[in-house]
Image (cartoon, rainbow, N blue to C red; front, top):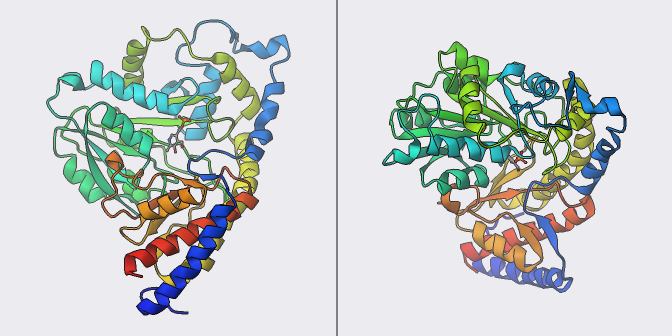
Length: 424
Ligand SMILES: Cc1ncc(COP(=O)(O)O)c(C=O)c1O
């Protein structure tokens, strides 16, 4: 079989005409399929919905002698701190348990740095002439949006197989206007990369010029294997402390993709000195977060081992979806030599690199045929992929039968845009 580059123009034209016919056939079916965002599918939501049958007895409202229905315990229920600490392999006193979304805690951390400054800030970041921020890319669009929202200058750091390019991180961290970096250290969004031990060690030992340089360590996929066993992961808090930088990192996690997105529980973990500083800044803002939901999660998830059992059940639903996508790509696209993609074992995405200059066109064609994809460019700062190549596939939401259709259409659109680029 010839690759598209090996075909003569005439052969490419014939192939394009055949694909156009197929494309029209899909369009005529008026489908509406969605591979845009990393949302759990209905089967996963059903899987965890017995969480609502908990808390029927009066004693279920009491945790460590605390009535969870009342105000108090701003930094979270002690039992919820113990649960997250066990999952993240840190200490309960390093954990602040918040509301329904870790993204909100991330936004709030940056917001507090902006208005009041972090523990080691010489001044609030709003008073800095320029704040620069490191953004490993492809990365998570909502991270980039937060730092863009506060007017920071975003600097792209290329992602590698072992995490962000650490030579570049170390180089930029010498600039005192560079105040921090976004990281998704396990099953990164979208590449699905697990940072290597060397990368993690280099982060912990980073000698940043800014005294308040902050690593935003978003461990959103810390227990989210869909293939194979749970992969243990080093605790960044103790590594930073050992390296003499205990206050350089804030870690984040949530149960959004363990129980219910938007109705789960989130946390941040940090040094005790940072905890004291952040607690002071949070006191005027909130009396306490939703401890009823925290308690519901403590009763439901119980401990790390029990939570990992639940994650295996999610994996049994997620695994076949990822295999559907990867099998279709192997079958339809691999022989044509027009793209490359990652093979993650956890997380929520497949990171796909189309032929440079064709991602946006592929996205448009997909939309025309009824498939919603994450916007091309979304995985780069300011939504601009300089290569117009990366596309984030999110296979979790549609049932397998719909996913089969969606990925067929994606492959078709990809072929059409590659042929257009090569000349038809
Ligand atoms: C890396 C990453 N962080 C955070 C989130 C959102 O988490 P939460 O629901 O806790 O705000 C997502 C959701 O896709 C994500 O991919």
